[in-house]
Length: 201
Image (cartoon, rainbow, N blue to C red; front, side):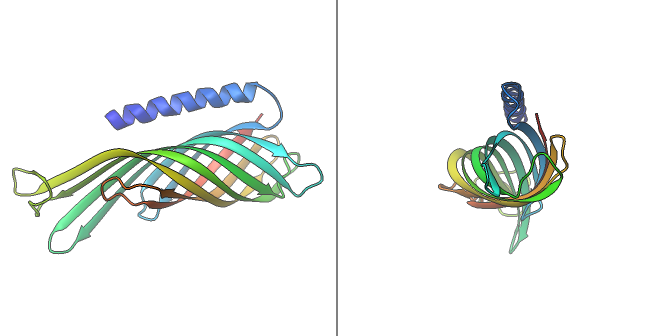
């Protein structure tokens, strides 16, 4: 519940900021939402705002933006005992992309490469119905351990997009998050596949 409330507040604030930015001018502000998954087939949900800055007589444009991404991943492993891990992340990031062959005024394919920085809130939990040595015991003989914390990270982004004209485009992106510190045994490298839709004002 605590994680859900925090995520809802973040989504509301970012959506409000994105709409405010869009109202500030007509030079390429936009908002987007997306769904995706990671290498463990977890769930990722994102929302963001950005501004595209065309470069005169060049085949690329700059894009600057801010994003929020919620990710939840479950993983089960079995050795001598059975272990179930859950990792939830709230990711707040800023990014700069190069959009190659992007043309807002006409339908076209374009290509994306970029970098960014992120602040990440991580909740990690591991449970075992068999192993009683993890930390907090269960009444049935199993146990669990958990850890929560924050970490800074860097993002590398690659993707391809389709602009349909009239302010609407879609993308398939692979943002790769690298955390600079560990929280529990949560992964420090998190590649994600994200499908998103953007509307530009």
